[in-house]
Amino acid sequence: MAELAADQHVRYIVTVEKKKDSFESLVMEHIRLNGAYWGLTTLDLLHKLHAVDAAEVVDWIMSCYHPESGGFGGNVGHDPHVLYTLSAVQVLCLFDRLDVLDIDKVADYVAGLQNEDGSFSGDVWGEVDTRACCSVSPQLRYARALRFRLPCRYQLASKADEPVLSHNRSAPRLEDLMITAGALGQKKGSAQALRPSCLCGAIPHSIRELIYNSWFSYIALCTLSLLHRLHKINMQKAVDFVVSCKNLDGGFGAMPGGESHAGQIFCCVGALAITGSLHHIDRDLLGWWLCERQCKDGGLNGRPEKLADVCYSWWVLSSLIMIDRVHWIDKEKLTKFILNCQDKETGGISDRPDNAVDIYHTYFGVAGLSLMEYPGVKPMDPAYALPLDVVNRIFLRK
Image (tube, rainbow, N blue to C red; front, side, top):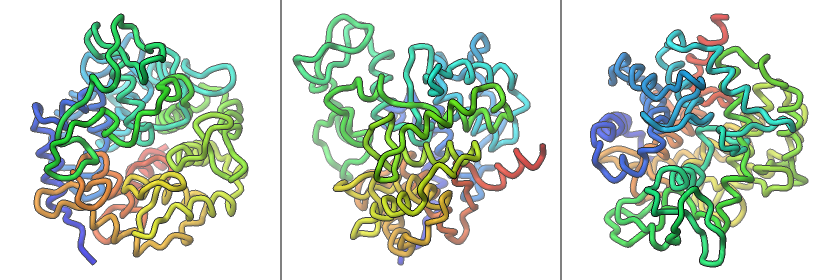
């Protein structure tokens, strides 16, 4: 079996940050705070957080802060959103610098996004989701970027006969927004034109499914818990909403009645773990659904009939750990799958073997190995998606 190319991955992460004009940097411009969380957490898991200047990172994080609202944007000058607020809090936790925050101001921003039914909006525009920063799909982030960041002549339409969904006036279809080689999840060296959906999976026919029918509960609960401010929300209503997303197969969807998906399951199980509500889960039934995600190549997929993807090494394993069913997975085969997705020369991990690497899958690959106690990788907390020593420092200090 191949070994983890830790030094190459550290070099890749540090190098990517410096390539401000690269394709990868440009397409992630609107989610740079998420990228910082993925990359810096990976460095910490590999015992290399000192490879970056902590003061410089903290200063940049705070430059994304909106003091009038208490939230963080995905980059400097971008609108505040609960997704990026969690990433900011998580990164500050890594460096033990929560002291730079007005904690109550940030907590009030998050708490103020709770809706009457217990769910949470992602921002003042009213997006609603149960997912976290590490689990909100790149499609949703990209859809939101298109919705709010494109020049005024652009607007997102998923098909010719469907109403457009942004503030703009004219609307090229997705075919007009195609981007070229080097996209995440593509074969190395490919030069075919690609839709924005290449960032990870396909953009669905109706973007409304992502913008208006998605849920953000885990982000809010995780953020408030890390800040010791869960008392600022109606926690019972938050739990009730998450439970309402449970399906007959034991899994959870993005909303009541939504299809079970491993990413959504992590967020709902994580939310229930953080709130001490795991008794709402049928552990054997959910464990069966999750262990069925292991494919013949050893990797895990997010739902039936899909290809394996390294990122589900985190979503599935963390959920199985929280419900005490991780022993139902063949860890040796999964470890081999993740290691085969490495670029051993330049570093980084891809979604599948021989595909282009990216920060997102590098983080989730290393995190998956951490959950399987791979030698040389720090242990991860399955609910908070942070190194275990960081989580212990936050909660044991209190």
